[in-house]
Image (cartoon, rainbow over all chains, first blue to last red):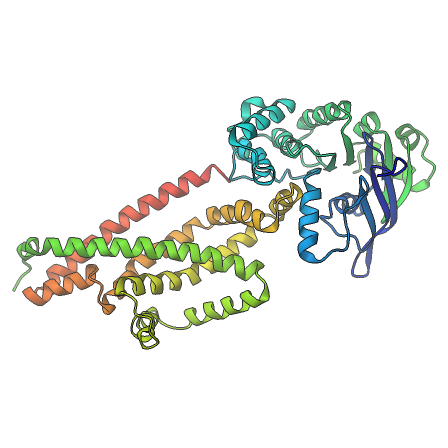
Length: 256
Length: 218
């Protein structure tokens, strides 16, 4: 990896569903330790862009690079599966609906992948689970089932599960959108903690205040294009484009 | 000539052996129907077409003929091509595969009902498709389909009676042996019925326990 190469580099990303263009030639560079927020109205393509980073949604055209490795490399199916499974271990992802495994305890949710993919022993995996849970403030919930937790707790377990793989970057896909307002803060606190630890993060969010306070860079997307990108204080305080202005105005009025 | 159950105790050994065989057939064939059901369901939904279509065709064949005919084919038919299976083995294979096809349909529906986010959750951690299916999807699909699969196992218990026709001394066959010596069909068939009820109750209790244990983890 040459020193000039960005940590994450998305080049000319395009995504079509039939005639519908969801992403229209988007490029994005993220440096190590940087925290990037992607905002925009529903259907703007922000989740699709995020999900292209670990190839959960494959791009129609364009490239995604992580630390000098192309994520969406053209390979024969079998080789590609190996390649992407390996890469995904380094890309943590947190979903709007948590996607915890309901048939497994919190401990098993966290230890499943480290045990299966990294060959961790039971003892080491348990230790890892305990550590990660304490990191999100849920050390005492290790033997609970997801159904016994609140939404905010579920999301914190989901974050712990992703962190247990020691990822190089964390992707957050509207991580607090399905939470009751009073539970949002506990998840935000965990994300702020990660920010302090210099975790590279890309965050799709509807929470402007959070984006403003935590992020180094903000992308405003609409209809598959990046309308505006820059420092949070510029995007939020002095947006240049009409579309950004009206989106932010509507947001502040609570219309979204 | 009224009912006289005093003839039964003399043949109790025979009846109990019959009950044991019925239980053995149900357990082994039940295990085959469950394992086969999962295997067929996963192949039908995820398999390469080269295995998917043969499995679908096989399922169609099994659905389209009576279990009795299938047992005859496996026990009497296969001998002609040099495969001489013991009656018990032929019986559990026939019964097991027959119900595996039905279980497969249920489990397929169960797999499709598991939220897409579960697959995404597994795959983003780096699990392969197979690991995700095996560790995350199938366990949930089985939990969600326990009641109808339990019903199939109970149906399997009752259909185990058909294995009597290829000469396994399960409950029905054992009763018939007793009747041929005593000419007391009513007493022995009622005894057999009582045995079926008893096994059924035990089976239902086990199934309910499994369902209750699965409740919390969904």
